[in-house]
Image 1 (cartoon, rainbow, N blue to C red):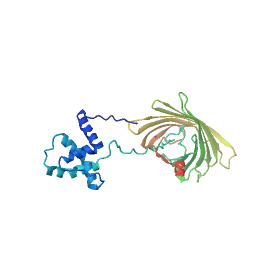
Image 2: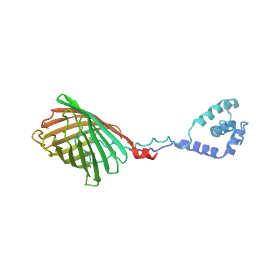
Image 3: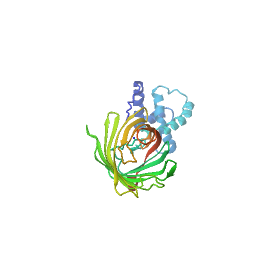
Length: 336
C-alpha cells in the first residue's frame, strides 16, 4: 500500500452585493424596513411564515438597493415562495462536505517474490496472503496468515491447502514462526529484521518434506527514491524423513528483489533467488521472477506473474497469481 489545497477566488464585482447581504442578515430592522416599502412587516415571532419571510429578506433587500422597487407587488408575491425555498435548500455559509474517514490500514505484502520484506504488518492488524501457482507437473495453493502482535513483532502461519506433484495431489506442509524488526529504515541504514519459521509436516501422500524443519533469515529492506529493494540471506535445516537416519540436511537461501511503482496503482516486481544444494536428491536451484501488482486499495493488493528456473530441478516456467488483504485491526475492534 496526496493532499491537495484549493484557492478560492471571487469576482470583485460581487463585493458590494456581499456587503449588502451581510448587513441585511445581521440587521433585521433594516431588512424589515426594506420590506415595509412594499407593505410587508416581518414579525419577530418565530412562526413558519415569519421564518420564511426572514429568509426572503436578503434577496428582496438586494432588489431594493438595485432600484427595482417599482416591480409590481403581484410579481414579488409570486417570487417570494420560490426564493424562500431556495434559501432553505442552500447549505450554511462556509460548510463543506464531511471528508471520508481515511483508510488507516496498509497491507504489507510478502508476495509475489520469494524474498520476505523486512517491514512488519501494523500492530493489531490481521492480514492474509493466498495464491495459486502452476507449472509442468507442479501446482499448489499457498497461504500465509500474519498478525501484528506488537509494533515490531509479527506472528506468521503458512499452509499449502493443496499441492500436486507428478500427478499426486493432497494437502501440503504447514509452517509457523515470527518476524522481529529491530531497526526501521533511517538515513543510509535499511530496515533490519530476523525471521524464524518451523516446518510442520502436515503433507500427505508423500508430498512436502515429510519431516519437521527450521529456518532462520536476515531480512533487509531499503528505499532508494521510488525503487524498493529486499535482500534475504538465510539457512534452512531440513529434517530427514523416516526411515532415514535422524538429523537435518542444510541449505542456504539468498534472494534480491526489486519493485517500482508504475502509472496509477500498478507496480512492477523482479527478483533473483536461489537455494543451495540440500542433499544428493535435492540439488541447488535458481529462479528469475517478474510480476506486476495492482493495488485495489491500500489494504488490498493483487499480483500475477511468472518465475523461470535458470538452474535446478524445477519446471522451466511457473505461472502464479495471488492476493494480499488486510482484514482488520483486531485491537481496535476489541476496544469498541
